[in-house]
Length: 147
Image 1 (cartoon, rainbow, N blue to C red):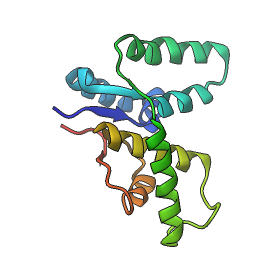
Image 2 (cartoon, one colour):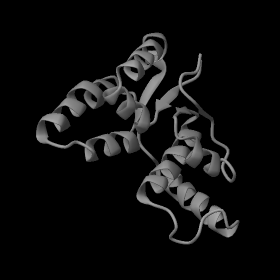
Image 3 (cartoon, rainbow, N blue to C red):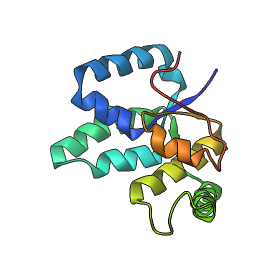
Image 4 (cartoon, helix red, strand yellow):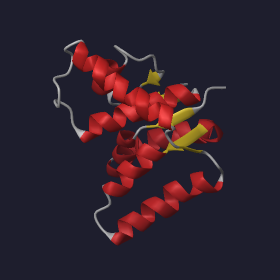
């Protein structure tokens, strides 16, 4: 059975849109035992907390349940190196300009490298960044919501 990581954009979308939340709920009802929380996603969600109440809500309702069940993924040193190589190769191939990428793209490279290393399928709506990453790195990425 496939194991999944949901990208930050899906949690944010579900928080902002009732239909998106229902779609995520349907997916989680079916696949929750196979879903993991990635450290990069936790970091991005917490970094976006606009106040202490929101930060606590993100931690208590999302992060802590995954931690308690031992279904968290953190990038290894090898994944960090691989993420650097992804960026380097994209620059070498002139698909990116040196310094022409932001923190979010760097996080996506770490997420991709770590998911590949752990054998996890990344579920995201961010096709643009991950299509670019897949030009130099084999990683399983699917759009919402796989069946």
